[in-house]
Picture 1 (cartoon, rainbow, N blue to C red):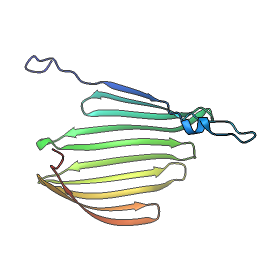
Picture 2 (tube, rainbow, N blue to C red; picture 1 turned 180 degrees about the vertical axis):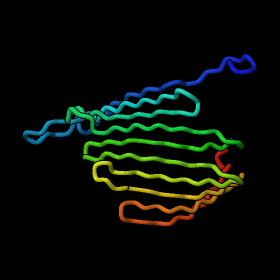
Picture 3 (cartoon, rainbow, N blue to C red; picture 1 turned 60 degrees about the vertical axis):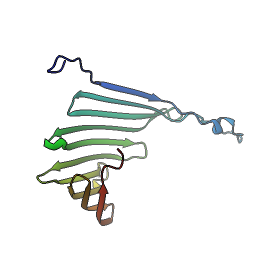
Picture 4 (cartoon, one colour; picture 1 turned 180 degrees about the horizontal axis):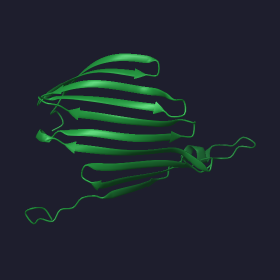
Length: 171
């Protein structure tokens, strides 16, 4: 119940299970020695919201034909409410795929005073020991528009960006 005695509800968790089936693959003519593989990997997702500020997301894919996991991702996100409806975001995630990549990453966006915020994002290949992607930015947002100045490094490529946003068109 809330402070006024009204009954309130919140979602604690959600679970999804998705199984794709390729109709074209199931009807395809086979060459000698070939087997049909119409089933896409089974995808399971779990989202847990133990507290309004914290969310834990996990997703995994199971390949029926390889008899193994081909993808897994787990992320923990903390959203800290600030005044004026703003929210600081802190996220940490781990990604695995069967091509041999294991990645660890973080995302941070912190609201400062007078409409300014700063942020950083990093994705690191754990096995190879190098940063796949890193970016940093400074944002300014008013009631109806915003601007972002940022820098991004992706593998060996670097770029500087300047972006503009307009708010309020979706209402």
